[in-house]
Image (tube, rainbow, N blue to C red):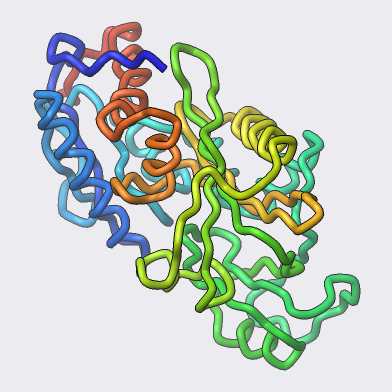
Length: 323
């Protein structure tokens, strides 16, 4: 894939790299922000870091030509930050308000994706405070996750109704309870290149210690191992690519996304969720898949930023948030 490096003459003004934030994924966001900033330095692109956890976000963004969203979690990946930036007139990388909000709310995203023919995990929505569970078709164990969190935050396994009741009682969030599908945990990145969507090689996350790709396993290199390309047959790989692109388009994602799947030993696939702002640490899922596809980290950053720069030029928004 021929990807030209970014050049300073593409940039009408400094890029605000938005990172940090107040979500439970702040640590992951800070890693992404530092890596993106280092890449922009190598590109000789003027930039500065912005943390929404700090005061006066509009003031921090004054003078920026656009924003690079190296951030994740609630308040950032769910459309809230995107809405603020739209109001301020600051173009930004990644998906807009609607795709971000739908993608972050797992039950809604599943409904949209399933309507396009992508097989999704069986599940039930459980409101906070629920004490009885009426279904009998999910079986045990089940996996439990907050309806609007990413990064495996709050995810747990319940092996029976007693464990499920304890998890629900301890949570202040509405929860999605899904059948725990056995098999390989696989993720597939999608990225836009010159107007076309390209699916990256599937990545398998192996977690022999924890048994599933938990919050702790994602953040501790000793608890996970990445295998890319994933150990799946070519036909399964092609289907994963197809499903990831269908998801991206169905949800209205922009520039890039990442879909998570389970693949059982017979090759059956179920879609779990989408990440509309995948983490961008140099050793993370998205960067690893890109590297296997022949796209180095600086090229990945260029691919993500370039569509936003094109919008800036097209809309004549050379700038800056007005004083």
